[in-house]
Length: 286
Image (tube, rainbow, N blue to C red; front, side, top):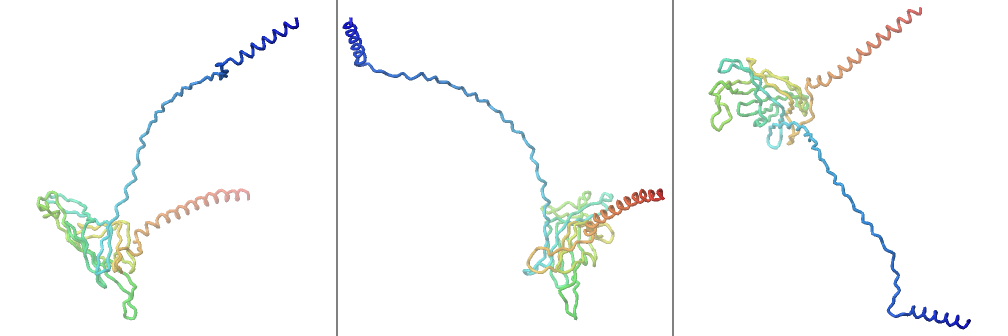
């Protein structure tokens, strides 16, 4: 019995060994199945809305006024800038009284002369011409002229032709901008104390000013934003430090005076009511 068991065990072992070494058989480990997950990405389209923001346009800066100059050799003796307008009243060809404004254009041509005691500036344009005369008032020391003193406008004269729309003779000739006729006024102003300024300084006046420009009172020369310097030294076309006119000085002082007066009124009112309250209380206690 024992022998049978041993023989059977040997046979089983031989069969197992033979099965393990069968040629052509390969033992391969099968990897675990990999599960692939596909994620679908959903793209959400975003619509962008562009708002039209209104563009704010900055106001244009006022055009800088040109400066008319008078030169002698390499030296500039006279500088002038500003707005100049003639206010004219006349009887038109139709018989009606007409009030008109005539500007001296900024394109007016400048000429003039430079003298030791007299400077002149002549403005010429299509409808007329205007001459400004400035005189020097030097200071004398021991009979000699010093570099101190003042200058000022002594006279203004010229000619102005006003176009009358009811008069056919005022139509400009072909190729010309000058009127062929119309109302002609002769300007004549004597103002020996006007624009008086220390030498080596410029006269400046932003305020409105006017001068009666003829003897009949039909023409007035209106001025704003004026700056002028006569007897200027050197080649530069820049104004020297300016001296403000009386109107500009008053305009700058008036707000200060107003605040002072307002402060005094408020202080007086408060003081009155305080005295009225505490004064009566004191009398009542007595």
